[in-house]
Length: 188
Ligand SMILES: C[S@@+](CC[C@H](N)C(=O)[O-])C[C@H]1O[C@@H](n2cnc3c(N)ncnc32)[C@H](O)[C@@H]1O
Image (cartoon, rainbow, N blue to C red; front, side, top):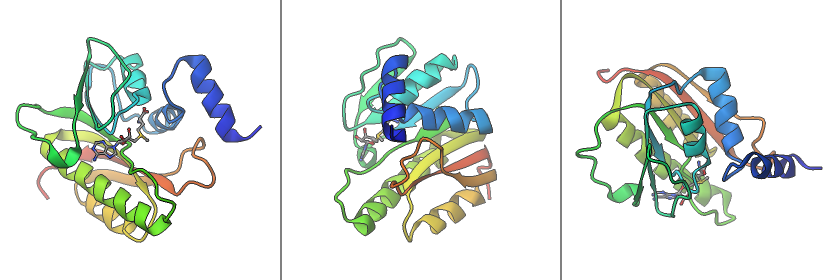
């Protein structure tokens, strides 16, 4: 059986809304990004498997944004059905952790998809710089293309620790990669 089927079935069996939860769980086990009582912003959160994982980790609150509906209901989860290019960040407060699994709908054209992914992930980083607490953590997905090194370089400037990582549960054909950044420094 292919790996994709394994994680898809495992998510169903364990009550998670998407197989992508195993990417977050693997990253969090290795890098300890999310801790109990953290306040988390989840950019591109739908259907909500990362929200489910955060709630299991006993965070204090998760704020999620997506253009599609989220399928999680919990009093510690607040959802905003919004395009990240059109959000107003005032009154959101600060977060200990920002997660972004945001991704464009794929067109089949790898260059176009990676360029769209870069634009979305760069926007997620711009939002992060406004709302992340000093010393906070950031996780962002990007489709690897020619813009990937420049995003990594930009993020590195604001964090004590920063590296890219491809989780085991990522499909072998996928160009997606995650940037893990810990220890936010506002002033650079
Ligand atoms: C891979 S999915 C996220 C899966 C999620 N982490 C989970 O575990 O359930 C990527 C999400 O990015 C969202 N998205 C794409 N463009 C967006 C935009 N401009 N603003 C907000 N969300 C967007 C999509 O609607 C999609 O739900």
